[in-house]
Image (cartoon, rainbow, N blue to C red):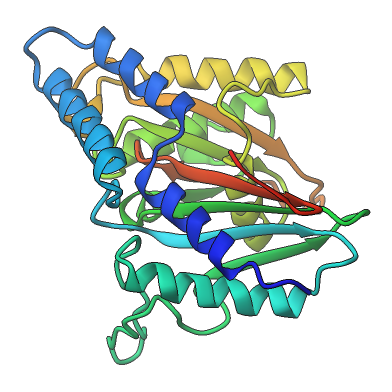
Length: 290
């Protein structure tokens, strides 16, 4: 199998230093709706200046360069073991080049490895075999602040009056946004998983965030719920960085999974304004980044 370590290093560089155009456009719109001279608008101005500076200087968008989450779909000519080895080598090299800050800390002793390599779960690598010979690597860099405010609910939730239906889902997702306040570095994005078990719920909620910001949900009911949650979250008055205002959530993506009859979990992964997600596709000798 060919060595694509250098291509993976480039994927890390782009993801860490160059925010996707669709996300920047959403942030531009958020700045425009905030009141002139308000703390909320000032926060958005600072965020957008930071985005441009990072792109120009090829430096990380945020001082918390996040947990590297790789979602890899590989064809028959690719070896999963070799891919994992090369991804880990690329992470170490990207850290050496300062595209990432050393973040892998031993939970028992507090020692930082210095190269972003920990056990098999750091960086996180999800591998899925697909037909053909194509390789698709999605990389998400998820900051600790927004990861900390992710939540999981088990319906029914008597305290919130949330039953096992889409109205109950709406109530708990909005509660998660309210509980986060400014700690998740708003304005943020929501990945929501309905169903599954506790573990798969968090995985699917993160996979939901891989969908393009303007990608329409194929299920009309979920598409309508996504829009409603986004609109209602922006009436909570939390605003950019918790300073108050109209821009709290810039997008919501929902996926539903099968579940056991006894369980009805709703899992929310919150993504901060630094929505760092890029895709590398290799088909034959052609390498594309998006």
